[in-house]
Image: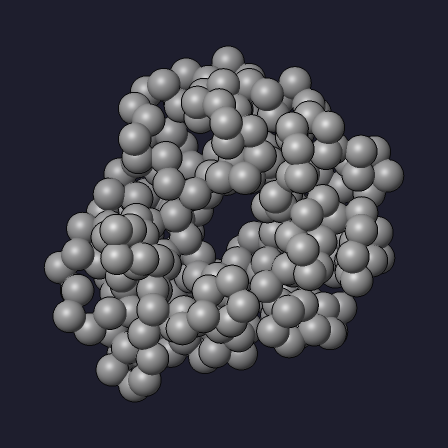
Length: 254
């Protein structure tokens, strides 16, 4: 049986985070994950997780200054202090809610200096995360939704992971982003499985529920199982209406 995690950045995002956790449990999800939970007191999230028995699989580091469109700061050479603060904030919040994974967001940058900055900040993050048994994730984002984002391909991510050399640095393999940028999901899963820390999915190209579009997720989910991936898969899609009305795919693909 395939296990699913509800990404509460998109699903039930019209509710408070604790209420979204409860809704995910009621809908039959096996876990939850989120984007930026920082406006919600960690104790409220921890209470909802304990009540439902769900695990919050992961959360993101801060986007930075959203008023100017930032989408992470950890690859920005002039923002190292802000990057460390964002990493520390995410690690502390994750520890309070027993979340095992932190997605460190690079932001809009390019070039060798940005690469070196990202590597240095990830080295810092992995050392700090290792103190509490936490894992750091990095995620390539596609050029259509996030033009100019520093990390765009799985091979770029592999190079960075190998350079950092920390056992708790893993790849967030988002099928939606990877299909748009690289395709060939089955072979990429096989090649990257040793460094994959979490998998997410949505339909391509519209980022809706996974039972439409150009990706056969029944095949992909079965292939992941055959490759030995047993953790919950992250449903990070945008419902076209109320979340509860978008869940018909769960029975068919689970």
